[in-house]
Length: 506
Image: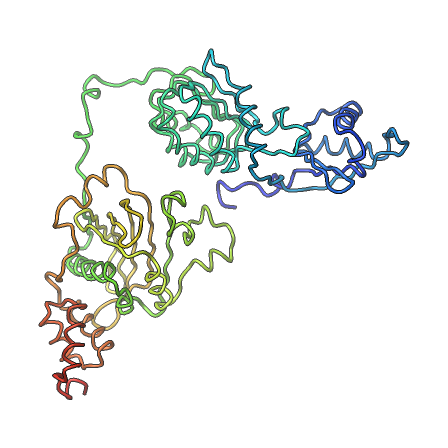
């Protein structure tokens, strides 16, 4: 099972309770009678009419069994025994209607204490005001969490304490909650106990909130972190004084540590190449690759990929931030269907380049690039490049961050990409400030310092496109400073004027 995914057994632990001919009777009277006759108290969720019958949902299996035991044992005012059916079910999925939104606001208003600026959202969907109504508003659902947080930041941004315990929140739930953190500057106390948070990746996104108190007991991450639990949490929230109802000892440090700033950190290494002999080849390859990738003819990248190449892309962010990338993202923490995982894995160079053609036209800033070449032999080479880019010809004006990992193998005099992974996300604020700040960040119109291996690869590709032999293809490229697009235009013009000798095609 993928870590962070909901337990299927727990997901189907819900019970649907159907009351035959229940619509004939007063809802309040009927529910009071059921509550009075069972020894287990329950909260009917999403009470709904369906023809002559009515039904509701329960999270408690023992309560469902108790109701099942009452089948035909309650005599109704018309003399008929009440028939009760129960069946295992998934949670109800109700749309956010205006009526439900009004109820959500009412429940939140009742649960807010203005004097202490505290909002209690514990077990939110089980609130009595939802009971017996055709409503279901669980905070683990994205649309409900977004609506609740919108109400908070619009109406009570001064809130200092929030209790989100027992809401079945997952790792992804925290991602949506964290998107509002900059508008919750007064928040000091946060309870997240008894949820389904299994790791700290999305908890990290809450970094920056100056919490004094935090509760996380009852979440899987507490056990998985073991003895390092307190240390890891304090690194995310350094201002924390109380964790899981336990007062934390002060952090012991040295006087000189307080004077340290980010300038004391080691400088960033923008290039790591284990084998220096591979550096020039990789650098020249990347110059050619990204020049073609940033052009309007990405099909020219076909020559760069192996016939059996595989490619996958993953993206991190919301659909609003990355509308083109998220639908085709093969993030294995998000895509849990085997068929979809298979479909999102591109196999064969035609499939790979066709997918790259579909992505937005781009402009990369090579001044932001970092390069790692950790492994290189005569039979295989692995290298990773990161940096910033922006889209051309779209309404998206933001700067993106990318990471591309290439695995290449020899092919004739050059090499081909046998496997590539692409990762796309929003650039950090620091990266945005550094990207596209000078004219030199614009893509070069020529290919500087092209090595012999790259020249041969370009000549082979140009020969395949033009039909000319390698000698004339190389000559055409050389006359145009090894600029593939410029050489192609020159070839088309010369061919149209009949200036290319017949022997060029021998």
